[in-house]
Image 1 (cartoon, rainbow, N blue to C red):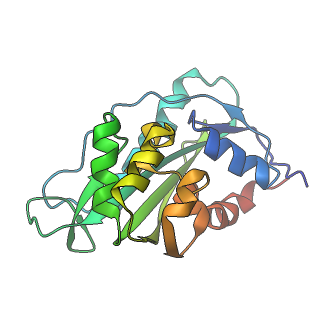
Image 2 (cartoon, rainbow, N blue to C red):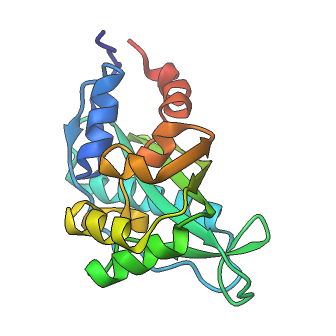
Length: 208
């Protein structure tokens, strides 16, 4: 199946997972990676709003290099672990720690140990901007993921594969990380990096 849009779709991301998801639903697109400094969410900030803003910033970063009408897609995915620390950002009033990409293998090991046997939230936001009109849409979707209890050996073996190094939360559910997951509540594709069902509904006005 091939989905035709009335204007070219630009993916402002270098994520191979997001590109594969767009191909999965038959969308043609061009990749223009957005290089945007993302300041971490601040004390008490609602992470949902922060993620939506990050997706918008990535889409906006691609606009200056466009010289023809286009529909630009930016996205951002964060892994959120609940915490009791009131000084951290919040998800619906609950303090959370934002788990980004690990700094190194030791950091990946620590993240996975923290997620073991617990439920966390994956939040994927996306933004669509029309060029040159500048109409903006941004949405964020949450999925809850529960890890089974992991042994230190299992964590070490998974970290040694190298898969966690470029993944938020130090795991990839679409890869070897699938064996760490006990259950999910919500949209699987949100965990991969792009909530396809929500995006599908948003692009309908631009169908050819």
